[in-house]
Amino acid sequence: MTVLNPVYINRIAAFLPNAPVENDQIEQILGQIGELPSRVRKMILRSNAIKTRHYAIDPITRETTHSGTELAVEAIKGLFAQGLKADDVSCLACGTSYPDQIMPGQGVMVHGLIPDAPPYEVLTTAGVCVAGMAAMKHAYNAILTGEHKDAIAVASESASAVMRSEHFEAEIDQKKLEDARPEIGFEKDFLRWMLSDGAGAVHLSNKPNPQGISFKIHWIDLISYANEMPVCMYAGAELQQGKFVGWKNVDKQTRDARSFMAVKQDVKLLNENIVRCTVEKALLRLIDKYALKVDEIDYFLPHYSSGFFRDKLLEGLKNINFVIPQEKWFTNLESKGNTGSASIYIILQEFLEKYPLVNGQKVLCYIPESGRFSSCFMLLEVVDGR
Image (cartoon, rainbow, N blue to C red):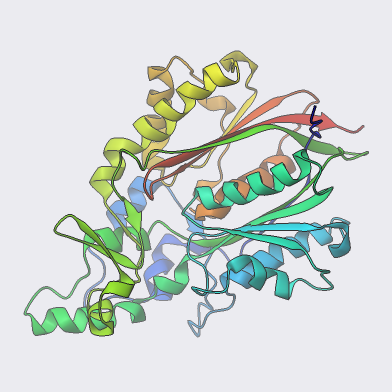
């Protein structure tokens, strides 16, 4: 009979580059696309309820200050500042929505920049927001099975790198030639006001901290509904007459003229399906699977991309009779922005820092992904070493 080890989150660190950026600074830093300011910026910012976010861009020179790889390494250094040593760990799992390069994997690039790192088992996970939790689940399984005693999971996003106005110049020039309005489509402009940069990392082991708070991981559960749902959020591709066409199947001129590498989203598809798929369907199956009881949940940590979805998320919970009152919710979307796959790490770090947690409390984390509609839930229990 296989004996499985308990798994604990012993340390959490977050890294957010540069000073917070307020709403009226965004277009100055990312750059204006075309001759006129964005027509949808104010509308989207009112809806998403984000007041500040961080960009890995110097606000004066507009030069990049950190790559996604470097953001991840800074978060890992935050774990080292808490007493972890690079050679305490033997497994590294890295997730990101948009890596700095197509190859090699983001994980080995992060590994290569960690100070004094020994050889590690390294895994890179791809996707969108759930990529960060896929990395954490690999680290979790590595401890659970006894293959490793200590592991790091890290997620980072450098969304600003592909949202700067310079990346859309070829498309704007092409539209001017076609006598069209020199503005990018809503599916691209929408995300320029939604996404931001940051990284988070966790140290997992098979023992709780002897002093202070740890989180015992009861389970991490991921599910995809790509078998029944179309693509919703994507980059390096385009939808053409209902067909999904990747960047490798078009020439460079087409890639540039149509901003193939920009991040895009079908907002109508998102609004109509994100709660139904990633909350109602996904959570309903877990209630039976884990005998989950709503009155046992002390805190709920949801990663939602926009304040627009807060009440819709509550409505989804009501629809499956699993209502967690909003006073039990914690998110830092308003101040930290939507950092994609790194968001739940950044939420957890601030939650641990700010809340007076008590031994035995249960924390339910929710991480949806609109790429092709995936969802992750994680159940944690507070363990107080004191």
